[in-house]
Length: 228
Image (cartoon, rainbow, N blue to C red; front, side, top):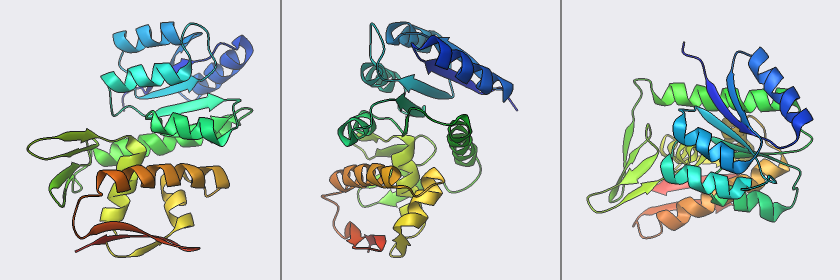
């Protein structure tokens, strides 16, 4: 198996040293940058499997860095690490294309778990399972996280693609909220639930004009992807 390459941006020297050391002990190859500008230069020159970005950094913050990365690569998973705990900051990060958000102080075990979840999904997406689904006028390419038809192409984040595939594999079936959260994040805590709402909102907006397709909210239970 090839070495997993991680781009890690963090301006706190002590935290960066400890996190990088733990990641390398787990056999990950880590490129550390202490500001967003050098992080973006590293991303353009290298090939990375996952990006772990601090938000508050000199020269270029994590939000701007994530936006620039997404313009170059719609697939690479992005995890934000930040002391910012406001719901608005989490939602902003997710809307910019991030796949996950860890609040400082975080446990290295939790970070490692999230990385492994992304890697498992990546391996699964590259397997022989069904990779193209039809959704109304769109086709959904699960390997490349893209909804497309003859006239347009809509890139999705890995989280959005994973969620949409989960719905398509369970069409017209009620999925409990905690079942979705555990499947996508490995956890069902409150903050992950808020992240789920952001992803569902975007999928609803994308599919709003598709007849016979809807993501139904079953209050207190979960969701159902309704498709005729």
